[in-house]
Image (cartoon, rainbow, N blue to C red):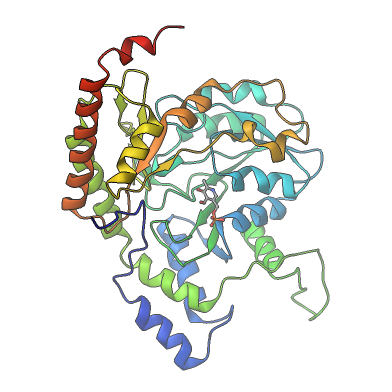
Length: 386
Ligand SMILES: Cc1ncc(COP(=O)(O)O)c(C=O)c1O
């Protein structure tokens, strides 16, 4: 059986043509027409004035916080259920991450718990649009306004997704994207900061380039970084961006197929799509609750035997030794994130996944559920006992 990977890049447009143009014209480093075009067009796509490309989503987050002068003594509110990059970016600058549990329905930050975490030191809130589904942004923006806080969207996983008809990345003060190979738009490795704030954009641009002074070469006004993307990467990004609507459409079509084939299986929770959200299903995530006839890990093992690759959900940041050894989050509880980490997995989700492949994955899951239902009819009740 051919293996079905959890995600693969989908390079079906003018990627090779644009990369070859870079090679032919000798523009292979961090200046060149594709950088300018990719930044301008992606920012515009998000409804923002400025785009600043970076080497990754992680460095986009770091650059953003640095451009906002977040540092020691500052607190930044983030969901515990996220990629480590969101929280590490805060730690790089000596600021303190303050974690919030997840909303059990959308898996994004529980907006009702943000207010309790605000202190005199809080500078920013960083909602993360998990697996392509928007965080409920209105309460976040409202809380931020009342407390004079900055909102930074981590939209690494949510290219093209929407909240109440507005595209993500354009709702907060600044937003960060990743273009890693498994993202909906990829540059191999890469990222972007988008914002309409000219001052933040200028600062991010300068810090991306070692903080060189504009007036005098080799004069540094701040301790910056080299987080520059290459024209070669931007060439790929631009070609990808030309097809973004198609990619989003294909992902949504595959999610709808998964939803219809998997509906009704006991103990299986399908991914959310709130009426106010357009989910782009960066990853098609499911949960296996105690009512399912087998555990999440048993299902993963069985699927792997059929050549179907899956991944487990994030492990909350409160569980990370790298952060706990700094004395962070020691007496805090995050039951929803713990449940997601224990029960969640994502199924093959790449843009190029065919209807046949989705059908095969679903048929296999149904067969496995049937097998386990028959082999272990009592499990459902056993697992509920204390
Ligand atoms: C929510 C989130 N933030 C940040 C990142 C970091 O992006 P990158 O891998 O490009 O550094 C990722 C990437 O996987 C992510 O999923």
